[in-house]
Image (tube, rainbow, N blue to C red; front, side, top):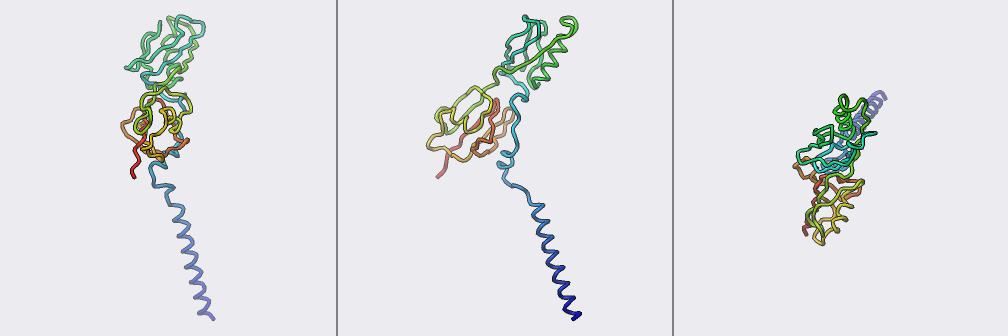
Length: 199
């Protein structure tokens, strides 16, 4: 009787150990080994929060100062020139950062307490290449994703791979593979390449 009790106890211990090992394995298992799936799960940054860059057109409003307020283009060197404020670096700064820089530049000898707001009129364009009907450069608009970008470029050709795209993000030299999905955002300056399908 005592022997049977020990056998049962040993079996229960083995079963509990196996269950614990199974649970531990499931907790440490990675969510996905596919880099494209991981990348597509990362939310893209809102265009309004993106750093400005050469080619962007901005509207600067200085309250009560019509001679400074107006639309300005960020030049190829990333600079913007305004009356009284002079030339300053705009590329790499977000809207709030540029507002603060302009406020500091205008404060003092020019204006006592300047109220400056910056709005983006147009972002730099994006590009669609590869197996689309009309490859080329297109003006950026808010809410753009890979499917709408392909549609803007006239749609895919009959040779196109309809499951994936490659995107070179602005400021990067790397092409990253993404699924053709409305959840994948296209940002200002991005290059979207639709690959050929291989049979």
